[in-house]
Amino acid sequence: MLPSFTYFRPKTLREALAFLIREKEEPCYILAGGTDLVLEMRAGRIPQNSIISDISFLNELRFLNQSEKGLEIGPLLTHSQIASFQAVLSKAPLLARACMEVGTPQVRARGTIGGNIVHASPAADSIPPLLLHDARISLISLNSERTLALKDFLKGAYRTDLRQDELLWKVEVPPLPGYIFGYERLIPRQAVGIARLIVCAAMKVEGEIEDARIVIGSVSPVPFRATKAEKFLINRKPADALFEEAGELAGEEMVGIAGERWSTPYKKPVLRSLVKRALRQAAAGKKKNGESEN
Image (cartoon, rainbow, N blue to C red; front, side, top):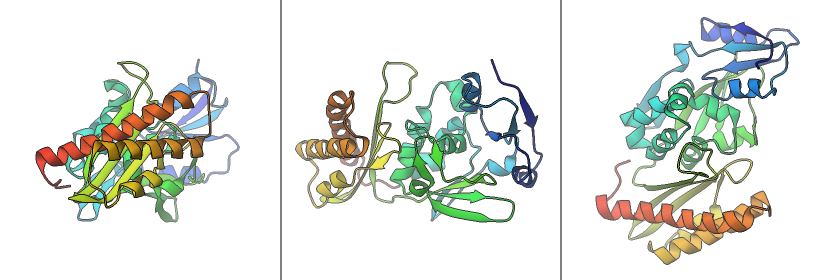
C-alpha cells in the first residue's frame, strides 16, 4: 500500500528547480521513471505526507548530444533508449550493454539513467561502465550549475552528493578511442535478477597492453576501479594466465574494500573468473575485429 503523498508536476525545468527551494517541512522526492521510487513507497521507506515532484514530462532533461569530447546524456533518457542509440553503441558499448541488462523490457522502457545514478544502488547497472569512462555529471539548481566526477558524486550505498535544491542535469561520457571492451555480469538465476557481480573491462593494446581499466560492481557500497589489477596488466602481452592473475588481484582488492563476509569464499573465485573472462573477451574482440574504432 502506498503512503499518502502530495503530487506536483512542474511544467518546466525552472519550475521544478524553484519548487526544490520552497520552505516546507514535508520531504520531497523526485519521480523520473518511478521504477525505484514506487518500490520504496510500497515498502514503507517513504514517509507519510511526502511530496512527489514528477519531472518525467520535462523534455529539457531528455537528450543525447555527441562531439569529439564524447557523449552528453540527459538524465531522463530511458535504459531502452540509451541501448538503442548508435552513438552509444559505438562510443560507449558497455553502457549500451549494461542498459540492456536492466530489469525487464517494461523496466527498461520506463527507468531512466538519471534515476539509476541518483538512487546509487551498489548493484546499479549503468554506473560501472560510466566509471570505466571516467564519466562526469552536471548538477543544476535554480541559480547555479556544478560539474564533478561521477566517482566523487557517489558517497556510499544509496548516498550521493546531490543537494536538496539540485537536479541531475547531464551525464558526460568521454570516449575511449582505440580501446577494446569486455563485460560480464552474474545474476542469481537465468531470468530477471539484480546483479551479484558486474565486471567492465577496457584495454588499449599495441602488441602489449598500454592501458587497462577494470571496474567491479555490486560487491561493495560503490563500484570501484581495480587499480592493482590494472597496473599489473600494463606492458604485458595479453594471455589467459595474465588475465587469471589480474582476476586474483581484483579479488584481493574486493576483500580490501568490502571486507570478509559470509559470501567472500564464493564471490572471490567467481570474481577472478569473471575478470579473466571479461579481459579475454576484450582480447578476442581485437583479434577478431582489429583495432576498435571507439
